[in-house]
Image (tube, rainbow, N blue to C red; front, top):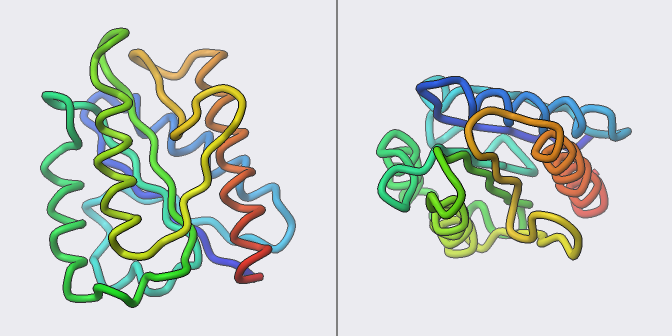
Length: 159
């Protein structure tokens, strides 16, 4: 059984709604157990317990929230121990051109530095799901597809 973590930070619950949609779809994949947790309930050492880790953050000044960056900074003591695990990222922002892609790329960059495998998507949101404001029909579909993609890869690699 592959274990997957969807970890998020939110103030407005928009990113939380995205996390829930990703986690729900991932949980429908056979052979995957999913935890959806706010970053405040995740310690860096617990990342070692998962086969797949998806991080979500609202966009603040074109980057991730400080709370998410703190988790990543604390994970440095486990450098190399996350290698080969599946990673992913998602983001919400206030408007189009609000920095969603730069936020996702910051998160993905950290996952890649850890040696994680990060899938892209040929259709839709290529780097990871994005939402403008709260979850809408388009972003909900992207979150579900991404959740399934990450979960299926985790099963292939670690299930």
